[in-house]
Image (cartoon, rainbow, N blue to C red; front, side, top):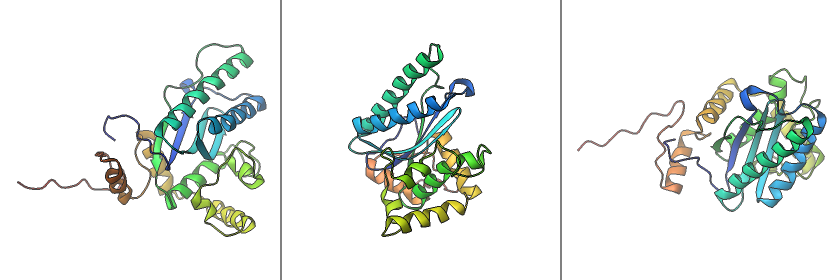
Amino acid sequence: MSGKGRLVLPGYSHYVQMRGHNGEAIFHTAWDYRRFLTLMGEARIRHHVDVQAWCLLPNEVHLLVSPRHSKKNLTALMRHLGMIYTRAYNSSHGRTGSPWQGPYRSSLVQNGHWRLACLRYIETLPVRLGLSGSVKLHPWISWRARLAHEWYVDHDTDYLELADTDAERRERYRGFLAMGVDPKEAELIETQLRRGQLIGNPGFVDEIEALTGRRIESRGPGRPPKKKKKK
């Protein structure tokens, strides 16, 4: 998107990535991981943001979040979370300075297929990166919290609409994860996140332009530019 800053809309999901400085680890011990999750769970309530999925890797944080009332909710959450974890991390490890690599990345995500695709992408990251043989074995992803009904994961409407009952919903979602991440979908998610662009189908661009009145220049893979009308 053209340089008017990060695009954030309340009621929509956003894929957010935080990275360690120079690719260095931001989690060294189980305490680090647990502390971040506790802080995130508290911050989501304070700043009115639903946390729909998360994955903590040694040097990265991947989140799917939805600000409830204002775009300021997401900004406040990320600023608060970055600052308070930095204090805890530095105190625990006897260091100074920020462990984070600059500003976080963020991409607006289309509801429906693409939101579910991002859920699956995030919750299977440890397996696809070779850090775990199964999502069941990696303790720092929202899949475990989702199935255990833990308080710091919020179910989005697309997940809830997978089935009428919780048991059937969980079973269908297990099957959805087992299908694996389509390489083309993974490439689009990674590219759009890196560029800070929309994650969705071509019609999502038109939807957001109509909603915001804002021209979105970059349209991602497979979307031809609009032709200018001849005078």
